[in-house]
Image 1 (cartoon, helix red, strand yellow):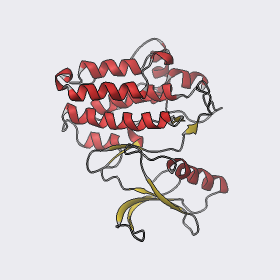
Image 2 (image 1 turned 45 degrees about the horizontal axis):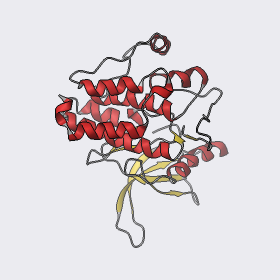
Image 3 (image 1 turned 180 degrees about the vertical axis):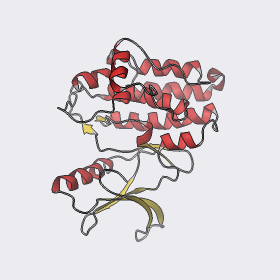
Image 4 (image 1 turned 135 degrees about the horizontal axis):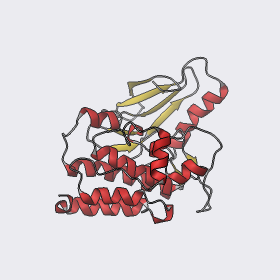
Amino acid sequence: SGEFGEVCSGRLKVPGKREICVAIKTLKAGYTDKQRRDFLSEASIMGQFDHPNIIHLEGVVTKCKPVMIITEYMENGSLDAFLRKNDGRFTVIQLVGMLRGIGSGMKYLSDMSYVHRDLAARNILVNSNLVCKVSDFGMSRVLEDDPEAAYTTRGGKIPIRWTAPEAIAYRKFTSASDVWSYGIVMWEVMSYGERPYWDMSNQDVIKAIEEGYRLPPPMDCPIALHQLMLDCWQKERSDRPKFGQIVNMLDKLIRNPNSLK
């Protein structure tokens, strides 16, 4: 259950299509008009996307109460909890395959000039085939056509440990700040859902990053993957790789398993 209400599973039968399993998010009673708008705005964002690594919107129910958002059903739930439950059970190739899927979904979003702003393992869902899909479009904002334009907000909660320094310091959210977050997700995946920066306080994390500290490689993490994380965590956002380059790099590593020793 999130800020808006419950999530449960169900079955959807659309005339002429076969019945499928779905996830149903409902808006809990007593909501305000603004909450209803915010709730449904996530669906209108999701509905614009069509990609195998982005959670798929099946539809919304607005004509009667409760208001519902219906999406494809992801059997294994959120990636962070799934990894913690399966600590040490996957091969490096399987883990890199998950990262490749997430990277591919993020390349698609960045090609659509879309900045997620809240990319983290808890916001990625996993289906029964280990396919990872980016979800949680509550914080997403569209960038106008200007490639330099970044959506800046006043206030608003920011997930500090996942957020690029320029986004924390002056709310500059771009696809390059999503790349920083992606590097943190890589670290979460390779460490099987460990908490980034462990028990450091948010203020300590901000200070450490400012002073050049970066997360060390998780246990048994191939050097090439930790290097890619470090590239994602470049202080200068123009020095970070683009999502397209990240996906190409991961494809190369998957084709060349010896590079992951």
